[in-house]
Length: 114
Image 1 (cartoon, rainbow, N blue to C red):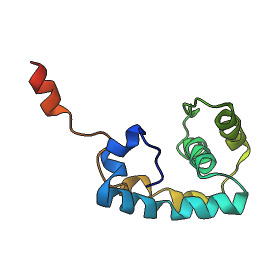
Image 2: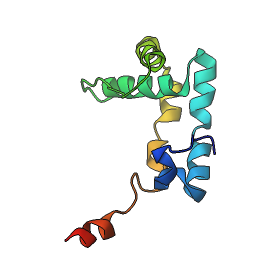
Image 3: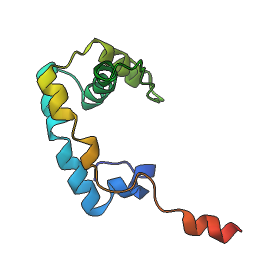
């Protein structure tokens, strides 16, 4: 409901109907952790990706896309956010619980072009 008119996510399965409600509820721990750190949910997500790599012994550098300078600065600030082991544990199961496909089923569109 907060997406701007023309936002492509309005057509993505994860952002529509019951999936949207389910996925919004999954963000509760993200928002709680963000508030505790004086950070944004996006910064928590980026910090989680970065620190999760260390947990698994991988070298990972998240590269988020952005069109605005303010978002770039927000993303860079996420590199200074250190999540506790308890926070990492609270965030870990979220990805497995996301409802809905990432993209709409486009198979009928592809078949129509053949």
